[in-house]
Image 1 (cartoon, rainbow over the protein chains, first blue to last red):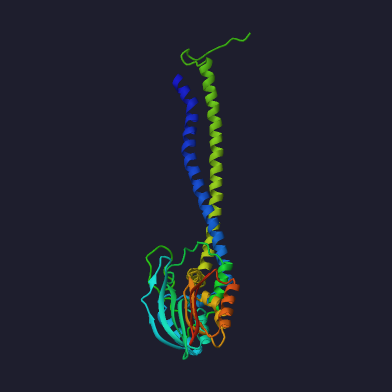
Image 2 (image 1 turned 180 degrees about the vertical axis):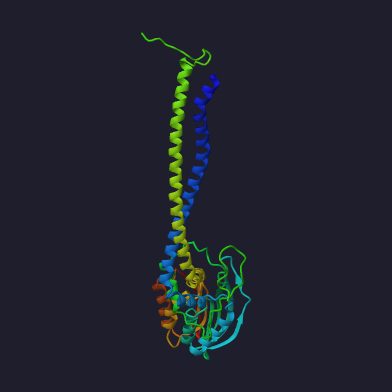
Length: 223
Length: 176
């Protein structure tokens, strides 16, 4: 009877302590889990709302801009387009283009590839200078690397090295909940520049790339 | 005077300090059960509210995902545009010779008809210019225009020659 009395007195406290430990452990774990899920869902909601707003805002204009950008920096080797552009420019600027050669091209770690072209151009000094300046106002993006200019009684002759750029298109879209940002002022300035470049006559948006096995959404750039 | 009557057998009676401790333990037991019930109820309510909030957020997020997914082609164009612009900026930051041509152009376009440009080498780092002048005046005018200008940081006269037939030949190397 003595021990029964002690047991009756202490058992409720003991059971409650045990319940506190187990229920508290489980309950607080669930609460923390839910808090983290809610916090993640809130940040996803904010990111998605911002993304949706940006996409709705730019949807009317982005098609032309991306087309101009893809023309300025093609997804495939730009050598053929650039050769055609140089010939077209030469005719337009009344200079004679000859000995047009191109190398095999090279890539760097940023994913940017370039191909070198060399050629001779003959004509008046003014026409050659106009032609050289027009090269950098033409898509795809190209830079005049070296000019060797000589003149004689017959006219002017320049040997020119140009590098033309290209880069493979991106293969995956970022995850749905990854935030997207609008163009910065610097990016807008670059977009203005590339939108002003004269386009190759037969430019098409060939944006097909190989499928990627990496994480993220499936390759949207595939036809 | 009241008498203390104990009807229980003497071995069962718990008195003294042990009795007080047991009484306190019983009280604590009751309080802890009450606290536990409040705690359990609180956690349950919190979990229910949080689950409802979570479900609401999930349905909003799902709806937004559907709307974003519907604009996937726009997103693809934005991603492509940003990728292209980033890489174009890298390309345009590379050194080029045309800036040097722009800088030297005012000097060669202002040359007189009797002056000939025999050689002009332009690369991103420097400009090498060779000219033939018929007269001393043209030569000095050209050199003065170069020295008066702030366009080039360094102007090195590489060679200076005179031939009675062709006149003065001047070679300069210009760097910015």
